Image 1 (cartoon, rainbow, N blue to C red):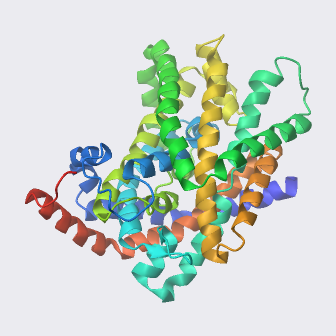
Image 2 (cartoon, rainbow, N blue to C red):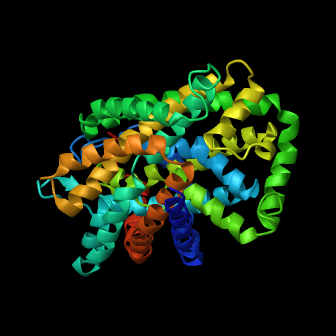
Image 3 (spheres, rainbow, N blue to C red):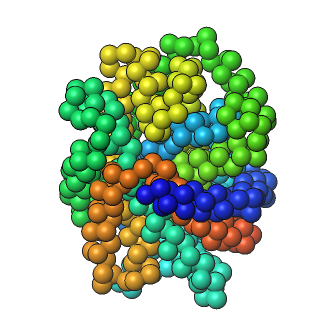
Length: 459
C-alpha cells in the first residue's frame, strides 16, 4: 500500500502541473471574458428557467433542467464540500480557499460553455437514445478525427467517478464519531470498515439498479434537504464565532499570496491546491456535469448552460466557503491534520459539543450517498461509450465492489487517484470548450436576440 500511495502521489503531482492549471483556470478566464460575462448578466433569466417557466415538455431528453442541475449538484455538493475543503486547508493552508473562489468564478463560465455544448452536440448511443457529454461533444462538434480525446475522457471517467472517496470518508466519520467513542472498535478498524463498505454497497445497489429516473428522483428530494441541514449547521458555527470571521478572511487573503501558513511560502502550490480542490468539488471543466445536462429535456442549448452555471457558485462560493470558515474560526485546522472529514467533525464538535458531530454524520451520510448515485451514472456512460451496452451490468458490479475497496484503503490513495483521473478528464473537456466557443457565442447571441424580441415564450 505504501508503494501504491507513493505512485499515486507522484502521478497526481505530475498531472496537476502548470499546463493543466493554465488549461483550467486560464481557459476558464478566457471563456469568461470571451462571453462578456453572460453567466453574471443573465442570472435573472436563469432563475426563471430553474422555476420551470421555459420548460418544453415535448423537448428531447429524459429529465428536466432542474432535475439535471439537482442530479449534478448531488455529485458536486458532496464530500468535496465537507472533507475536500478540509483536505485542502490541511495540505495548503487557508489561502487555498481564495484560489477555490477564483476557480469557481471562472468555473461558472466554463460550466456555461460545456453544458451548452452538451445539448448542442448530443449524439446517440447504440440503442438510438439521445446522449450527451464530452465524448459526444468532441466527436459531434470537432469531428471523428478527434475521437482519441473522447476515448481519453471516457477511460479517465471510469476511474474519476469511482465511489472510493465517498465510501472512505463515510466510514471514517462513523468510526471517529460513533464506533471509537463507544468502544466498539480499537485502533485496527479494517474489519469494521469492511462491513460498513459491504452495507453501503448493498444500499447503493438498490437505488442504482433503478436507473436514471430513480437517481434523478432521489437527488431532487435529497439535495434541498441536505443543503438546508448542512448550511444551517455550519452557519450556526460561524455565527457562534462571529468575532473571528473578519480575521479569518484576512488570513485567507494573506495566505493566498504568501503561502506561509502551511506551504512555507510556496504560493504556486497553494494556487494548484486551490484549483485541485475546486475542481474536485464543483467539477467545472471536468465534464461530469455535461454528461448529466446532456440528458436534459431542452432544445435550447444556451438555456441549459444558464442553468448549469449556478453549480460552481452554489457549490464552492457558498457551501465550500462556509465549511472553510467553520474549520478556521474554531481553530481546528491548526491542531488537526487528520483524515479530511475528521477535521470538519472536530469543528462541529468544538462549536456544538453534544450534537455537532452527530449532525455531521447525518450530513455526510446524505452527501455521500447522493454523490454515489450520480457518480455511478457518470461512470456507466463512460463504460457504455467504450464497450457498449452488452456488458453494462459488469460496470455496475465493479462500481459497487469499489465501494468496499474505498472503505478500507487510505485517504491518500483515494484522493490522488481521483485527482489524477480528473486531470485527464479536464483535457478533452476544456479543449472542446475552447475550440467550440465561437459556436456557443453564436448560439448565445441568437438566443438573446430572440429573448429580447419576445420570440421565446414561457410554457
